[in-house]
Amino acid sequence: MTSKKIAGDGLLFHPAHGLCRVDRMTEQEQSGEKVLCYSLVPKTTNRMKVRFLVEVKHAESSGFHKVISAKEAGKLLNYLKAGDGSAVQTEPAWVLAQNILSFSADKLKTRDQRKRQLLEHSIKGLVGELACAFRLSLMETASRIEKSLTKISKVDSLVLAALGRAAEG
Image 1: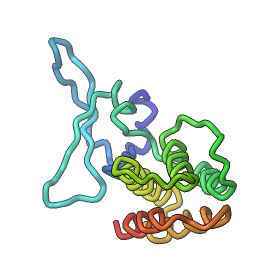
Image 2: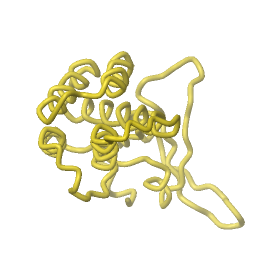
Image 3: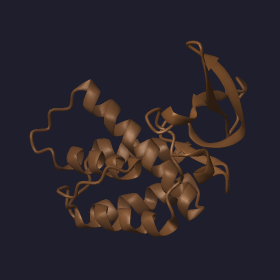
Image 4: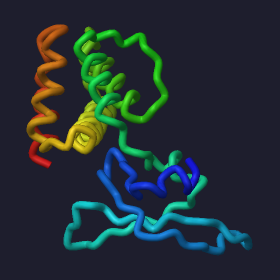
């Protein structure tokens, strides 16, 4: 992702930190060389006033990416409706959706802590990103995801609980 790609709206999304605004670009010295960095400020502020400093060339590997379009978000909901976990996409939002489907399709019901954490992370990230794309509340977006998932089968109780927590913010 180049700095020119985000210059338009200056917004990046992270599954755990949510929507962030590029406050400015700075040049930092790291390991004896100058590197270009994004100074990112979360759109929802808390009392800690968090700010991220991420090297431009490592922004995507750090989890930050451009918010998907409403059209792409609609395709994601259709993907969840179809329940076809075989589609291979590498875009961050698609990976989150694939994680949710694979968890839902797990017939062995082996629910270890890491799988539950991955589910929580995936649902929180997908709800947040789709809410940004559709410009809806978290609750409305979680409801849309739940409706999409119920098209294929009964939704797992852990998935429903995670959707409820994601809807609350």
